[in-house]
Length: 216
Image (cartoon, rainbow, N blue to C red):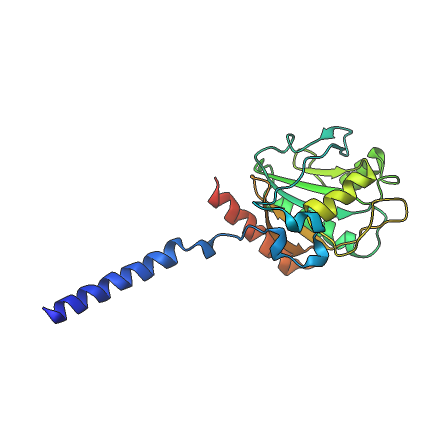
């Protein structure tokens, strides 16, 4: 009887362990809370908030002159970045890698790419339209955004936690970051990626697929 009991316990333990590895939460992407991030990335008010952090709503204009809000991309996974069209260093690499993301999910309306200009006073709608055409941005999926500078900078620092520097979004302020931020359909941050690196872009594409499987 003892041997049988031990054998049964061993089988049960094996099943529990197997089940754990099948359904363990670590198989899912983390949901990032401000308290988990580098404090230099997070506005102090955001660190003190309880509950899940969600991306704030916004009202900006894309390369077609259309008004874009969270409702425009409602229910879609978002990849966000912050760039400017005259950037000679990291932005061309980021844009090229975002083009790879767009290609991987071509015409898949479960994904939206939001590229926010950090020099909106220079990146007008016609300028963004030319830049979008140059890089093959599908306007139904990839929105290059301009508009109120203070709003864009607040999004970078207080919603997406995309940059380490501090500022007020004024004329002398400047955001320059290589981060791509992955946001799920519930507006929660699920990942950060170095947009200048091909390997990080590969990880981003894989994680988008994971999110799509998580919430088809």
